[in-house]
Image 1: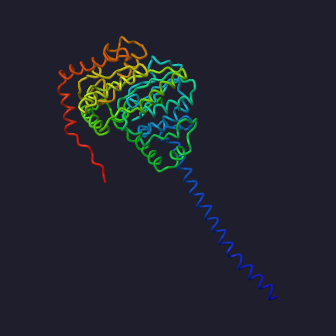
Image 2 (image 1 turned 90 degrees about the horizontal axis):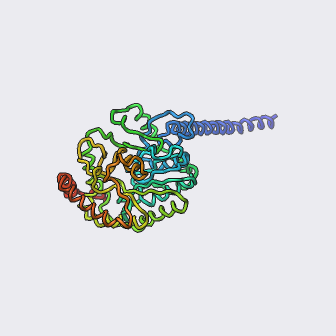
Image 3 (image 1 turned 120 degrees about the vertical axis):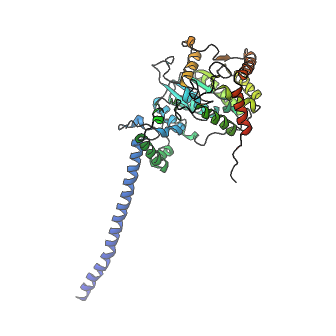
Length: 406
């Protein structure tokens, strides 16, 4: 009898830890399940709101929200757009292309998919990578219209931190981008900002557009807000700050050469042009003693391929600075109306609508004459607009570079 009682007692003593273990396991399952449910909810919420607009091609519950977070994520969402849209015609370059060239221009064939691949602050190396990325996803790529800027060829100009080369050349979104856009704190904040932005639309934000074809005519400012003179001063000062040094880069010229060769090799029509920044932009080159480098840059490019030049001092680029302008948002970014003139000229479409002095096809044969004319045009402009010459000179004289923190 004693043995039986001991066995029963022993059995009860052993069962208590088992119950504790079961409760612990149940709690762990509940805890992990709650976390998993929370993570699933967060990821689904980010997928549904889609602040960077990268899931719209695969989202059956599209909420049709404005996506202001797209503005600063060109390199991400345009990578994914190329994978999904597979454009046959691309307009590629910097933010000047992004804001100025409309892929729906009537001179571009409607039966072909068209996309604006302009990216803020890009250079020729980055353009080459995105061109190859496009071809990998669309081997039937037919036409590339490329806008170039002087800053792109600066040896001191570094690639942007947002440039992630490993995401290019793929036919799918890479895992790190998928994780970051669904689960990260940045994605949660971006979703919150997207919802808030759609609930609090102002008169200024009504004018901002977020196109599905990569075209962002006014991503930052309402051009009719009366603040254009301030933006001119600001972008001129930004140039002095962003490009305190300039050296024409052989690497960036080699990238340009590779772009031309790539298009020739794959039978892709390539049209190259220099962006039509305002005359005050070229004046910044003069006051920083970079005019000779500016001319050397053009000479180097036409050794590689003919280039349409819309820069300089013509009836478009010399528009007087005033509160509301027809041709410019600031001294660097031209309006879609000017972008239409550019496309009309280079595509030989309704050229009678384009100012006669706007756009010259530079070649090795005419480059010397063309550069001489620009110098002459500059002298004429300086006499007509001495206040704008003084504006640039004053901003340069008073410019104080920001001190780097120690």
